[in-house]
Image (cartoon, rainbow, N blue to C red):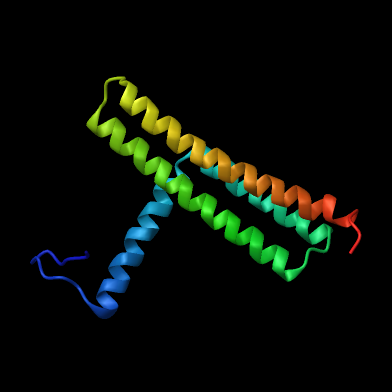
Length: 129
């Protein structure tokens, strides 16, 4: 719920602009994560591979959707880490488990992105149509 300082809920274009500014802030925060920067580089490399392998439009769309999912999971994982570090700065089993589970979610999407990129760039060319 986006509110002005007066406590009234924003509507229409002001709400849209406020929400966009929060998303931009989140993107800036995510760029501070080394893992996310590595994922951006891997996506750029995959896109070069797609160009070289003459990928279809559908394959590009599928790769972009998988990458957007990976960004979303990375953002949620970073949010979990931020909250755990704030609420429980000492080392605890619950905090460690929360961080480990977020990391696993990201790993699953990294593997899905990697497998799909390898399939499109290399394997799909050897399968009969």
